[in-house]
Length: 500
Image 1 (tube, rainbow, N blue to C red):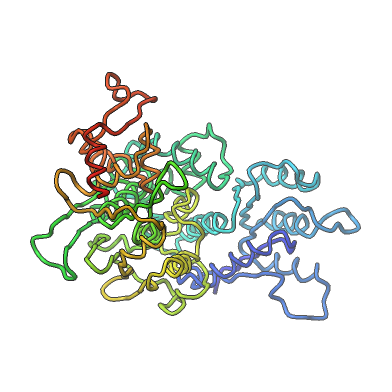
Image 2 (image 1 turned 90 degrees about the vertical axis):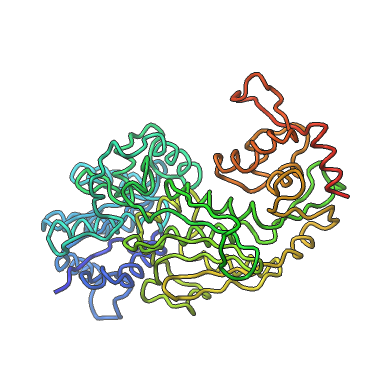
């Protein structure tokens, strides 16, 4: 017999969130096996009062999910809204209660709702959320914990289960606090800036009995690959259209999932063509990569977020003369199919606890829209639509058309590739083309659409300095926060030669 979940609140304020919860819980293979979800709007027309129906369902449910927002709702003769009556009945009957409050704080909420939130907070631990995607991730963790505590599953899903031999000391608190700041700015994560690492991990459901889960280690571990060897990314660049040896360029990247995505994306950007326009309209010359960086990033972040981490395989990013292939050891979660990926579809992440922090920091723009965004962006620049395939894993293929970048910027002064040409590498050439006056490191990275600082320093900045093409504005203080970089006479001469 299935566990019955009652999701409260019929207010229009939560229409999107309620639909997202219903679709996710009914679509997830694990949850649909154990849970049966009740939403009032799914009830057909019957000859009964609405309040009798929803209160009867509260009596029948095993888990009561309360969604509290700004609105209190229509009051009955005793001054109680439907949500308040549901909560009181669930409390009186001793139901398992999960309370989720929308918003970072309670300012602007109806006074009666503020009182209800306080009353609930005195009895149970509340969770706050901002978006439907964040609510889904929070529900996921709570329902997995329920199954585990009631011994209905022998082991939790991979991302929620305890990472063997890992302790809290294996997590980097600085990385956790950096994430917190980014998530607050990007998505309005409802946690104070001064929250402790433990509070952040608890909010994200990343602990298993106060021990770090696999998702926690992948997101914030000091050395994630020490525990999860295959979580690395393998990147290769081939001059032809087939896998051949020796491989001209091959790297294995390690680190957190954020590091892996940034390094792999920057690897691809360093090897593909960059078209440079003229400075006729502005000081900064317009630049365009042959493939939109957003499409590359989406393909790679999806591979990292949705792969099967129990597999011994690693994500592979392979750049050929005619295409980019991103492969991961995983498959599509039912009921998704290859055909459905090309249409609007619900988000059914394989690793929800891993995907949620990526969403909160805008590595994933909107859950369930990634493939659609990739198709649209490719169409907009004249590229063929990305190809999706299931072989011994999931593969995304993006076809290369370097000439399209020229059309994007107009008035081309030259093409810069990722190959070694003359004195310097293609990466250094790209740096020289975007360097205008004196620029900070972060400004140069932004101009090149690069995110990973270590990769930028290793592949671009240090080689440019070593070759004497650029110089520091404050050479006596290399690490100064005011440090900038500018072209040397040698760099200017080389750039003029490159333009010709």
